[in-house]
Amino acid sequence: PERLVLPDRPRRLGRRRRQGDRAAPAGEARHLFLAGRLAQKIAVGLVLVRASRANRFDPERIGDFVDATCDFLREPSGEEEVSRLSSRRALIGYLRDQADALGLHLRLSVWCYLTALGAWDGDAAKEIELRRARDTIGAMPWVTDVEVEAVDKSRLLDMMATSLPLRAGEVDDPSLIEIEDYEAALPAGGLVPLPRIGDVGAGYCGHVPVSAFLGLLEREDGQGLREAIFTQNVRGYQGDRGVNERIRATLAGPDRAEFLLRNNGVTVVADTLDREGRDVRLTNYQIVNGLQTSTVIYKMRDQLRSAGDVHVPIKLVATENNTVRRSIIDATNRQTPITGAALFAACEKALSIEAYFFERMRAGGPQLYLERRPGQYPRSFEAPRVSLEDLLRAYYAVFLEAPQVAEKGFAAIAGDVDDGLLAPSLTSEPYYVAARLLTLVREIAVERDEPRLAQLEHHAALAIRVMCAPQKPPVGDAGAMRAMCRRVELQLSQEGVRDTLAESILEATQSPRDRMRSRIQGVPTLKRTRDDVLKRARAKILADPR
Image (cartoon, rainbow, N blue to C red):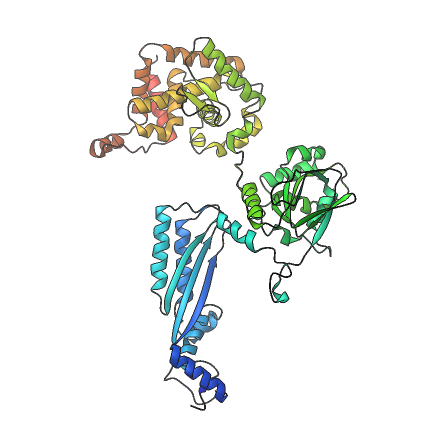
């Protein structure tokens, strides 16, 4: 036909209005008509992304994403809803009406990506959710192709390392370059050249004054932080808390010169590093590790700009090889952090407690080792041992009488470790006794095949201590604490007491309902609280003064 009538606003076939129609040019109309006759479809691709900074993939979040995607693809009902959702479902309605107006079939290809900063572990439940997501989205109207993928930290790093930053000459259209070339200079006085390594053009390691480091961070126009230099760092700023608060406190305190000793430093990867007189000039650089440190320094720039005693540890690497760049980014972001009780492994009190354990064994006491550092003893080491984390949680439960806190994990008591739980003035005997009681509970659980004891080993360890020494622990009196510990160890050394204690804690931690369940199912389920355990333990003491 010479003319094809196209409505200003697409409508379904059979609902056209005569008013407001416009005529398309004959050539355009003929082209649209012939294209429609040949293809009989309009192919549209939709890319939907759920971006998250979480360190894991949650199956529930996958379901939420699927629900949101289906809501996006669902046909709007009524003009009011179309108006309200003009940027979402109205888009699908518009595409559908365009296809209907031309007598074509709408064909939607949907790509869904879920991103997180954790690793995709291939967990069966998550894989099932992905398959269910593909089936659910694929059943939506007009959807002919669908793909749902999880993009984890490793894949994000690959994508970033191979695509950013864009530079002149890499694209045909200069207007597509979003990141301009930029450079900065650092004083070379505190930098030591690295040896030549493969495709690494140059490298330096050392320290720079904080005022010079601010030159890397600030935009040339002085209008804020240069965000582009953190493109290849997968972590965002974690807020003014935790480690960042400690960095700020160090830089604001009287010992700020020690920042160079306390901080792990910043890793910078650049296209080129050129020595120019007393400076090293960086071109197109990325801070791939040290975003938290850099952001805290920038936030404190007014205080630090003239701080001549503050230096930042830094490592500079020049390479345009994407594989090398990727390996540096990956390695600096995957290093195992020192967490939990390991942070306190080298403190004076931890060393003295470890020495006390050795002294007790040399004096003929039972074999019991303190694994002060993670991995200190090989897996083949068969002697009884407790980790430093186990030791502190056991002490917290047995002598501070708070097993409900200890069972939550080391994070629940970490603040008390900072506040004196490992103070050098404390005596070592209670730590040793707490470790013995925890080990005893674990041995009884294995011997009696009672896995439920593992669910409340801290409660059970406290129950045994109450049976041996029912009075309140005199934590502030070193001499009285030693006397209590000797009383507990004397009870443990008596013949036959182990079996008696085993029966007592099993009775104290099992209710009639538990016993009924054990007869029916064979595996009892513990439903006791801390107060129930202590009540039964203390009742045992009152009934049997021994």
